[in-house]
Amino acid sequence: ILNVEQSPQSLHVQEGDSTNFTCSFPSSNFYALHWYRWETAKSPEALFVMTLNGDEKKKGRISATLNTKEGYSYLYIKGSQPEDSATYLCAFTNYGGSQGNLIFGKGTKLSVKP
Amino acid sequence: DTGVSQDPRHKITKRGQNVTFRCDPISEHNRLYWYRQTLGQGPEFLTYFQNEAQLEKSRLLSDRFSAERPKGSFSTLEIQRTEQGDSAMYLCASNQGVTYTDTQYFGPGTRLTVL
Image (cartoon, each protein chain N blue to C red):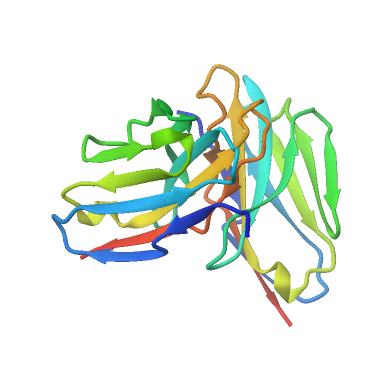
C-alpha cells in the first residue's frame, strides 16, 4: 500500500510568521509530487508539480523543495498572512501505478491569526 | 468561469436512497477523475475516464457506485442504496492527460451526508 504522510496535521501561527510543512512519500518508482492549497468551500488549487530530485519551485511567498531519493518534500510559507489559512495537500504519482491518479496525504491545516 | 464545476454542492439523503452527482470538466480536457474524501482523510482515487472510456476503477468503488461520461464531456457518479459510510466529499478533477505530471484541476466538490 502506497502511503503519503504529512506533518504536522495542523498548525496555528501568527501573521508574519514563516512556517513549513513536510510531505513524505515512497521513493521507489517516483514520478511526480503535487502540492495543492484547499480553502474551505473552494476548489483545491494547484500550487506546484515537481519531478526532479533537488527541484525547487516558488510562487510568491510560497516555495517547495523535493528530495526523491529520501522521499520527502517541504513546503515553505514566508511571512504568513490570514489569507494563507487553508489545508495544504501533497500528492504523488508513481511509475507502474495507475495512470496519473494522485495519491494524497491527509493534509496540513494552517490557521494564520491576524 | 471556465473551471471545473460540480452539482449539487451539498446533498443530504436518507440511507437506502439513490443519489447522482454531476461534474463538468474544463472544456477540451480529455481526462476526468473522481475522488472521495472522508472525514480526517486525504482525497482517495475512485475512477477516471479518458474521453468517454472508463479506464480504471478503485477497489473503493463498490458495485453500488457507477460512473459515466457520455460523449466524453460531463460525467455523473451515481450511488445506489446509500449507506452512512458513503458520507463524504466527492471531488471531480480534469486535465489534458498528456503526461503523468499534468496538473489535475479540481472542482469544489459535492458534500454528501447520508442520514
